[in-house]
Amino acid sequence: MRIYWIQDKKKHGPASVPEIISRVQMGELTPDTKAWHKGCEQWMPLAELPALADCAAQLLPLSKGQVATDEQIEQLPPIPELPPVPSTNPQPEDEFYRFNPKTGTVNTPEGEIRIAPAWARFVARMVDCTLYATLAMALIYAFKLPFNEYLLPSGPTFWLPMLLIEALLLSRFGTTPGKKLMGIRLISLDIVPPLSFGRALSRGFSVAVLGMGCFLFPFNVIMMLVAFFMLRRRGITLWDARAATLPVQRTERSGSGIIMAAISIFIGIHLIGYFMQPWLPTMIDRIGEASPELAEKLNKLTP
Image 1 (cartoon, helix red, strand yellow):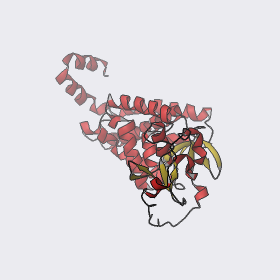
Image 2 (cartoon, rainbow, N blue to C red; image 1 turned 180 degrees about the vertical axis):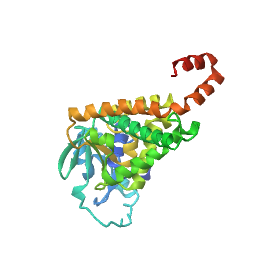
Image 3 (cartoon, rainbow, N blue to C red; image 1 turned 90 degrees about the horizontal axis):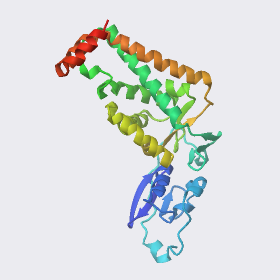
Image 4 (cartoon, one colour; image 1 turned 30 degrees about the horizontal axis):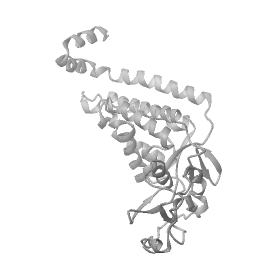
């Protein structure tokens, strides 16, 4: 659901339901802010919007003495004329997914579904990253590619193909191997899944920058901590708010799934080290240029 609102006598938007809730909780908007979405006959306070009915408990009570007069209402911009959106599979409005930050659930035509916890999402991400890195290094090892610093897992260029693969899996299946192990599926809040490839790819780039710090140490650690605390505070990550998506706990996590995730990460890390062995002499030489002592120690450890 796309919502428009009036702020400083100007029309803003559109924005998704999670974005509006986040703006209210951050103090950028108030429950009195005049807003509109498709299906409304006039501008009305955010607290009275039908799209926010499930989230009304999250909005502060309407401020007293701030009821808009008829003259003020007449000065509001006209209701926006929205162009028709072509769709080969139109869905009725009551089948849209709606996020309820109070309970941490999503209302769907199939019932109420819980949002995946942060730790499960982190494990799923680590599994996906490990599987991709293992596959990439296996191909590099098989084709005997010479050492190239742009092909090291410590650089952002190494991970670019993963964004394409992840977007393809999410747009086709709504999940990835890591998410599948943890019983997680990505859904959209304003259209029935699956997501489009472009939308999933845009979300992936946001995750890489805002959640993984472009895979550069120590920015990746810093951004992961920032994303975690923002998730605890707002109930939704910045990239999911931008893309109007949510990872939900589609199936119950099983002990075997968690064990498989741990085994996948453990084996993957060891395989990555094995596939990088042909590059070790060159890497140690590069390290020796900056620190001969460290290079000497590494030479002693290398079989």
